[in-house]
Every structure is written in structure tokens, then in C-alpha cells.
Length: 47
Image 1 (cartoon, helix red, strand yellow):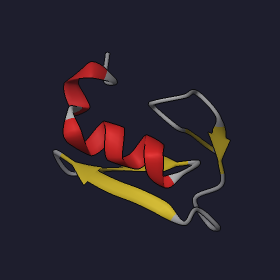
Image 2 (cartoon, helix red, strand yellow; image 1 turned 135 degrees about the vertical axis):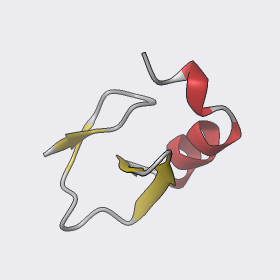
Image 3 (cartoon, helix red, strand yellow; image 1 turned 60 degrees about the vertical axis):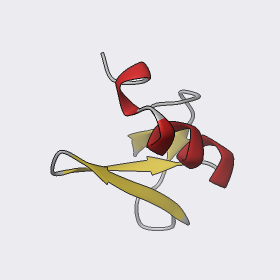
Image 4 (cartoon, one colour; image 1 turned 90 degrees about the horizontal axis):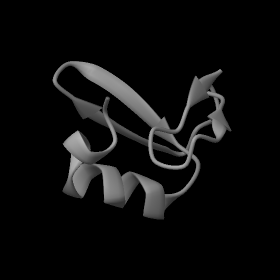
């Protein structure tokens, strides 16, 4: 399982509908909204 960096929800990469790449890493999201928030400003969600 992966963790949605926006909301912290567990996401299964095998079935995740929403994903985005940032600096060579793929991130998985629980919803389109979380993915859009991340894509708009990734640095806000990466520690």
C-alpha cells in the first residue's frame, strides 16, 4: 500500500485510479481532488 501524500489515506497502487509523477517518483491518490491539489503544489505535501 502507498499513502496519499495529500490526505494520508492508504491507496493500493494496483487499483489506484489517480496517480502523478514528481521528480521521478510516482505518487498515488484516493481521489481526483487530492491529485489535483498535489500537482498544483507538490512541495506543500512532501516533507
